[in-house]
Image 1 (cartoon, rainbow, N blue to C red):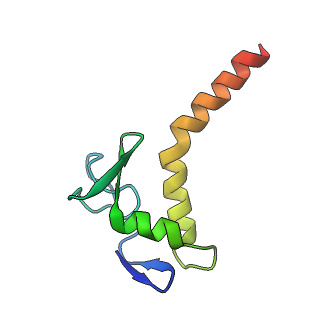
Image 2 (cartoon, rainbow, N blue to C red):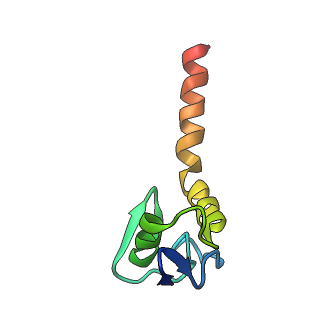
Length: 86
């Protein structure tokens, strides 16, 4: 993935392969990577995430991929809230 200004360009949204690819760009895992919630993020995508804003052409795709990454946390928190209310 290449950066153009503050916006990501390239292979964002590509299909993941067996969970061992970057959840954002879909590239196969290569060093160095960061593992977050058992998902892989390449350093280029981490840089993109740190610089992206809502005017970038890939903003929606990146945000959708981040939602996929964070969904287990949201589900767990919602269940905890339901238990606290119950």
